[in-house]
Length: 67
Image 1 (cartoon, rainbow, N blue to C red):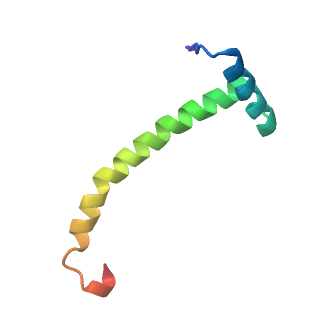
Image 2 (tube, rainbow, N blue to C red; image 1 turned 30 degrees about the vertical axis):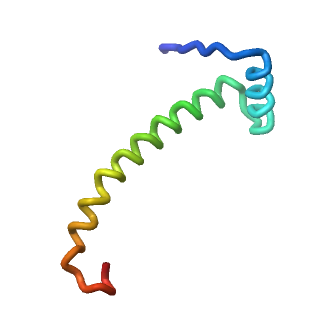
């Protein structure tokens, strides 16, 4: 499985480790979850931005109360 490395200061690593402990997960698991979640979030928002004009155009002729 491919891996990545991230350089953190001692203070940053301490804060990340503490946050992971409060979530009851390992720092590795937390990092993976956050990285994948952010990538998925960005993809979703990009798709939503593209779909919004299509949705508006689909209802532009609908009566005011049905838009």
